[in-house]
Amino acid sequence: MMPQRACRELARTRSDRLSSLIAVVTSSLLLLWAGQVQAGEIRDVQTLAPLVGKIIRTVVSIKVDTGTAATSGSINSGPPMTKEVSGAGVIIKSESGLIVTSNHLINGAKALSVELSDGRRFEAKFVVADERFDLAMLRVSASGLTAATVGRSIDAEPGDFVLAVGGTAGPAQSVSFGIVSALHRSRAGIPCQDLIQTDALLDSGSSSGGPLFNLRGEVIGIVVATTGEAERGFGLAIPSDAIDRLFVRLN
Image (cartoon, rainbow, N blue to C red; front, top):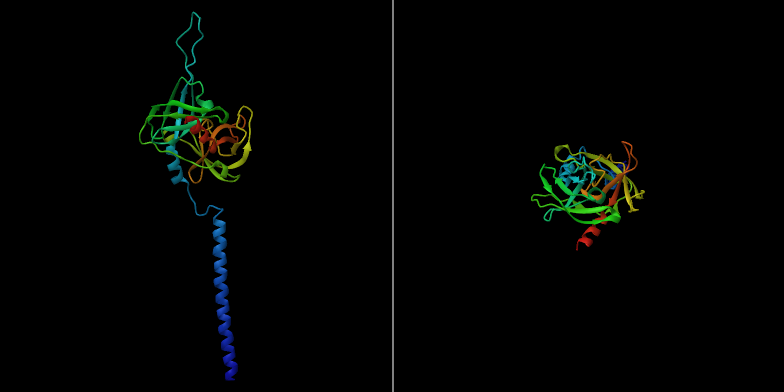
């Protein structure tokens, strides 16, 4: 009886050890699997407010005065009439006050002004433009600017989360959330044939020159248009990699 009892005890011990080993291996595999899932998902994120609070300081509202004059030679000609349009831009160099926006927004402007997210207003000067990519660079003389980080638009993929920030200055700035819905898009009237398409809701302040951010807070595009005239449509953005072309022209 004693040898049989000893065998049963040994078998039970081995079984317990095997069960413990299986439990450890299973737990390790579950942890590994969970880590892989988390690499492609957002978990336990309840708000994007900290990110929005950071990027919104880099976005400016741009007012464009076209200075349209009254018809010359008319007896009833009054004073020159002005037409003001608005859009957005993003600060990319804080020390030198450089701002990137859409070229079609500021093209032909007689005067340019920029309003920061904190309400300060400054006159802006045109620096350089790239008509092919509908991008332009402005400069303001201001201190305390916050510059955005320009990301690599070549790394963007359909399904990436993005944020679009409107150009209305002050606390009324609007932010919308969406995804990159398509790449390599084109639209009549826009020379660039490599647009980023997003389903983020865009208003009049972000559909001309507003930046498109990824969830790392990097600019991956400059919005130039929306698809159609409907209230809700896809946005189209110039890839941020084209911003380098402005610096090439600047130098």
